Length: 244
Image (cartoon, rainbow, N blue to C red; front, side, top):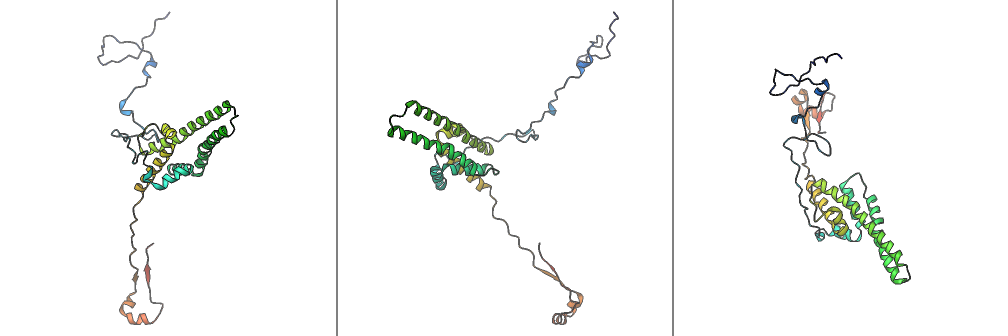
């Protein structure tokens, strides 16, 4: 066999010893190099580069408590008697491209419909004692499962609200809050968005009055104002400047 030819590539080190050179393969030089200066943090939402001094905003507390339903009488009554309407308004305020009717109908079918079915099941057990207990148990189990799924769905809306305004989990996880305190959570979310939207509303607009109408008269009219005013001839030139 022919002797292996000496490679033209050498491995360079910080403390290089020129007396002995170590042969390397050409592919060993084509390895990626980690450069810390080129590592840039990006926003998780828009993937835009962030400055080095950027720090994520800290979570803020809610402006009202979970049991502060009486602070807003209108939302309290709406959430008590028509929670589906209040939920639809909350979703519409959170995402403008979603009309309030769709989440309202979904809430009415799942939550209000489930509550009505539960009341009907309990009433049927008292009116008709001969109903199979297994059937009642299956209905009750299905209602609990439906309520749990509704808690997850409405909890997602609450999480989106917390993510938008950087709010803390109060008093616990969003899904657990809606599973245990659904009506109170709806009222709290409505008060939170209502307060923040009113704070971000534009103040009264500044009224800028246009300048008065200016007239430019010809030299002839300036020299003889009485004659020009009395006779309406074609030599009278009047220019009016109005604000657009």
